[in-house]
Image (cartoon, rainbow, N blue to C red; front, side, top):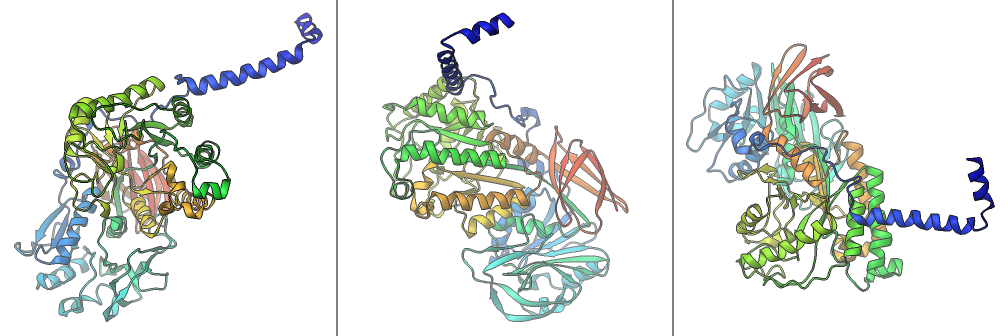
Length: 617
């Protein structure tokens, strides 16, 4: 060995040898980066469930015991409109209830129910049963008034029982909702409303009412409160807004009804990069040139993508890239794309090596539709035939298989969230590797009366395909998106976000502010998210869909005793995530799960056994 070292030392070209060694190391790194080899490839944190262990929400909900009584009036517009949202809220929380429509049904005895949900703004249809309800609560029942109550003789008869000392006849314009510390994940601050209106009553509460949310600030008009009455509980909402983005607020209110409330959640934080990897636009951008004096291509490669990787490193994000091969408008099966495979491969492999995942977006940006009139709204065409559609999609599949041969593509996101029923059927029939489809969560006015908008709930369909919608988007979150973000943390314990590389080029998505300001605001959102939601799991798209499968299948029976709680989970496979609120006592020890404190009496429970036992103190 000493002789070998001596020879190397005497070798007069050792400087050249060192340079060659450096070049060899660089070449090896580049080869690994671009080769698509299997090393460090994505391994799912959660795998898809076997077919025999998957359920739809409808299947699970149909067998839930009816522990709650829900009173509504289909003949009343406020009650009827609100019921559309509360049906989804209770369904998603796996709350079984007996549905009573007061326009045609009589009110049964309250005995035997654990809680009564009064989905009425006008209480007059209850008649004399309203006094019976008050007595039932006094004897230990729990009643929830989710709708802002109208002022009339019936509401006036019970206002003191439900915690109100005085109420003004006029309604109050709620501009933001302040969540008191300890009520909801992400609270301790106000969340603005994008379209404020007169929706709440100006009330003064009694001393025994505990306020959980108020208008504008913690001393504002009370919007959510809980009042003990005799041996029972009243929970009242005075928000007056019944939209999808508000579901998590009402889920939090429902959880105040019992000593302990537990419901399944998804627990995932997922980030989609639409149109990535894809062809990088050529030329210059006004805002990129203004701030960086460089081309779009160089901005993507040298600034935007390194910044996105920094977010991944800082917060543990696992990106799901959605590949698109071309931006041509061909819908006749003509394939003219000449992809920049080097850039495509480089971006894709860097994403994969960061623990991310790739899915399909399309050969081009034409939605999978064979008929329909959406060209007046979107600049897209209709495919001339299913054969043409298949030829194009096969081209994308072949490209992805060639460039990423060891990568499984199991997810599809429709371009511009347009997907016809026959397009969905086409995907299921022709591409069995696709296990999940991700549309969007909220209706969009841009779609108008179109039938092809891919708006979804978190669910599993009868074919086993997982619907896993994306909830918020972009780097600049407005009031609506911030509201939706906190709402979904408290209903599904999920953050589902998507963005496009060209957001930094589009003034409608924040480009005029500059990329520096866009990433600063996004960082503020991420800091709030991960500082608020402890134990939130960073996942890719298919991992999140696997979590959705488990969430959809699970339901729980909660038995509350003096010094312990027993939670029995149906359709348990390998894990179930839940949110649990302790309203009276605090947890001490847990068996069959782990508990992660969120805020106040709210905990994230990760069950590893179908029966969980929690001792209380």
